[in-house]
Every structure is written in structure tokens, then in C-alpha cells.
Amino acid sequence: MSDLAAALDVVGARWALLIVARLLDGPQRYGDLQRDLGVPTNILATRLRELEGAGVLTRLLLHHNTRAYALTERGLALREVVTALERWGAGGAVGEHDDDDDEEESG
Image (cartoon, rainbow, N blue to C red):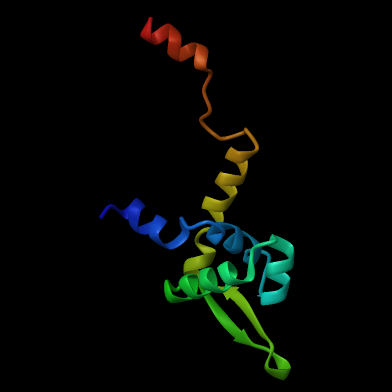
């Protein structure tokens, strides 16, 4: 398996990177993640378990048996990836080229 395929096994599932992106702002409680992202609770629970199992995030025990989720060092290392994808999604990806240039080269 390639390194890219291995990475996608961890963060390629729907909602996984959105959860990571939200946690880049700091620890979040389950209910806050669910409300802010609009992710169905069953999927959120599954993704949190998967990301925790992969060492991307950890559960924090707060007061009165409340839990929050925070990124580990491995999860924080995804900051550049998330930032690059956000730029790309906004249409301002670094290295973007003009399609006209491709036509000139091939024709």
C-alpha cells in the first residue's frame, strides 16, 4: 500500500478531515462537534473512534464526566494539509495553471 493510500485510510472517510479541521481550533465536546458540523451522530461517533484508534485525536475527561476531543501531535501535523485543501477549495490553490497553456503545449 502506498503512503497516500495509508493516509487516506485514516483521514479519507467522509467527515474525517472536517472533524480534524474543527479540532485544529482546540478541544471540542462531542455535542459541539455534532452541532457545528451537522454530522449525523452515528457517523460522528464512528469517525471519532477511527481517528482515536489511528492516533490522530484523543479523548479528554472534563468535569462531571463530560468528554472532549483534542488532536494529538499526529493530528496537529495535518494543519498544512487542511489549510492547503481549504485554499484549493476556494479556487486559489498554489501552483494553479491556466488551461489555455495546456492546449498550446499539446497542439
